[in-house]
Image (tube, rainbow, N blue to C red; front, side, top):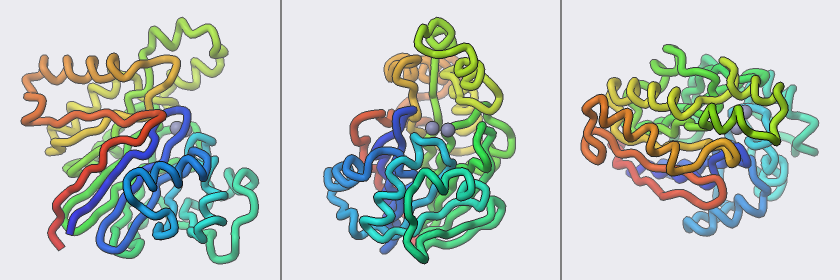
Length: 269
Ligand SMILES: [Zn+2]
Ligand SMILES: [Zn+2]
């Protein structure tokens, strides 16, 4: 059986990731309109009515704004920690009976055929988590919305077959941005904000050291980064460290406003 992953949308303007293994189909986050998420699923040949659940990372709008609609339209249970539910409840609208599911950050669980391992991330939200999802002997991890890349996150994702890693901003572009308030800039740059391109390259090196060979850069800022800059910072750092791109490491991008590639990982049963 194969494990399938597609970043439908990834960026500060909205996030929704598709994961499939066996007969189970999940979304991680639903931070675009329900219509846009349905359209993205259609584009990769997935009928939205066949989804089984939505896993939420944290309550920021770019991760939940379509969750209520998707839940009501497709009768999808939403999984989040109790603290995240409390923080997002009034933003989702009515949640049908039975669709409100909670889990503990430090307890693994199964959702159908997929093994779910949540882990804490350093971000300015109530109880933010990343996920490592297992299908057979392969796993896919998300590590976005992080102010820094602590050892706990490194250990949680170590050896994943595929990682979606945040490369949010270029600090100079952010500092010079005339649209952002001082407070917002400080929030993004803080220990509980977002990973800069350089911090991403540091984290990437640790992922490669721990056996990951495929990484997708995502959650880019629209105003304070460009895909080519994010890629260039990570690639040049890897080359300096003697890591062979395309051999030791396959590096891809996830996009803010268009559907990313569909990744198929061969998994043992
Ligand atoms: Zn976000
Ligand atoms: Zn966030």
